[in-house]
Image 1 (spheres, rainbow, N blue to C red):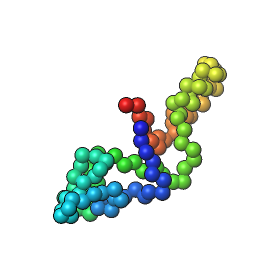
Image 2: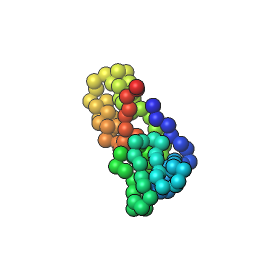
Image 3: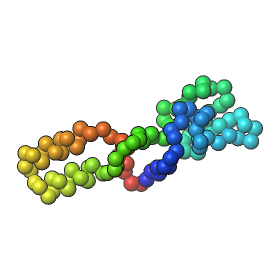
Image 4: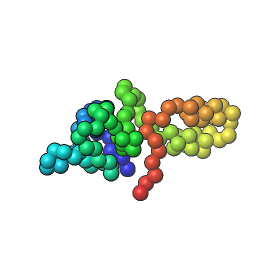
Length: 103
C-alpha cells in the first residue's frame, strides 16, 4: 500500500527533499524510503532513478481504480460494441499512479 502526503511538493533533488535525513556529522544523507544514500558533493539536481516518490499532477480530478471500473462495465453491460469503445477510451487515459499488488 502507498501513502500520499497531501500538500507536499515533489523535490527536484535529494538535497531539497523534505524527507532526507543526515547522519550526526551531516556528511552522509539517507533516504528513509529507499536504500539510496547521497553524499555531500553530488550534483544539486541529483535524484536517484529508483526514487520511490511519484508526483501526482495538480490539478486533477478523482483518482479511481480504472481496472475495476472496466470490469464492472463489462459485467453489467456485456459485450456490446459501444461498451468496447468506452473500455478502449478508459484504457487510453494517462496513468497517474501505477497499479500495485497487495503484499
